[in-house]
Every structure is written in C-alpha cells, then in structure tokens.
Image (cartoon, rainbow, N blue to C red; front, side, top):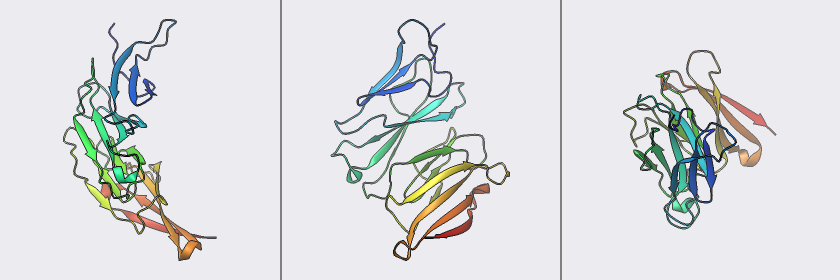
Amino acid sequence: MKPRISSAFNLLKRVGFAVLVFWGRMTAHAQQIIWERDGEGDSSRYGREILPLGDQNLDGFDDFAVQAFGVGPQGTENGVWIDFFHGGDPSSTEPYLRIDTPPDGIWTGDIWTLDFNGDGFTDVMLTGNIKIYFGGPDMDTIPDVVWNGQRRDTETSKYPIGDFNGDGFDDFVRYDGVIGGGAARRYFLVDCRLIRFRTLSYTAER
C-alpha cells in the first residue's frame, strides 16, 4: 500500500523552516517523509501554522494550508501569507492558491477554519479586520466577507464557537478592543447564518 494523506494533520510536523509530512501509520519502522517544502526566506517561519481544509476539490484527498511570513524582515511590516495545497499521492509542493496579506499591521496572524456558509466546504477566516474566504473548488484570493472593526491591532480577536444557536451554521465571538480607555471590553456573538452578521453586543465592565 502506498503512503497517502488520508486524514489531515496528525500527519504534519514542522522542522526548522520546513514542513515535513509523515505517513500516518505508526509502526516500529522509521516514518517515511511524503511531503516537504522550505520557506522562501530565512525569517519566513514556514509552517508556523498548518490548517486542515477537508477535501476542497472533491478528489477524495484532504487538502491543507500553510502559514508563513513573507521574504523580508520578520514582523507585521513584512506581511503574512497562506499557501493552499491539494492532498494527493503524492501531494504537490506548489500551492494552488496563495493569500498574501498586505504589510499594514492589521492582521495579527490568527486563522480560523469553519464552515461559515453551511455549504459543506471549510472556509478560512483571517483576524484583524475579519476577512472570510469561502472554501470549495472555486475558492479565490478575494474575500467573500469583510467586516472592519474599531481597532486594527492585536487586541482584536475572534474565537470560533461552532454552531452556537443550532441553526446549522458555525458562529464565532469577536472581541473588539478596549472601550473608554480600558474601562470595558466589548464582545460580539456573531451568527453566521447566510453570512448575515446578526450581532449581539456584550460590554464587560472592569
């Protein structure tokens, strides 16, 4: 039986600036590397986060995304990108899609993957100002949903909570920074049904 990527990413391990994928069956023998790719710069930290995407192109293999910094000096001014790869036997080491974020400091580097629009494909959400990219065979680099927050720094966070209200769509909570010089913090419970963001705002006083 040939090695294949059959289930996303109990198979992945990051070493240095390279990503190594191992055959997932544990035996007494040495594990076989079936996928390897280096970053494009000394500070790229390629593979700093690896995300399972399910089967995006319906070929029977699970796909995945790899996060890295750009090729310049490390930091938010360098921007961050996400490379998307199709699974296979073997899997290609050339990404079929790259989302390259602008070096403006509005993305803190967090990525969440859930099915926000309920179509059965895993979607990708970036933090900072919310950008959601709908998954599937037609996924592209243009965000399908953009929600600008009041703050654009690392204090803006999003937390996926699954299907909070039982309507069949994954939801998330957004923390949108400091109010009144630190006197309170505001949270939004976001219902993603049809991506019509019905938000419930909670303000927590200190």
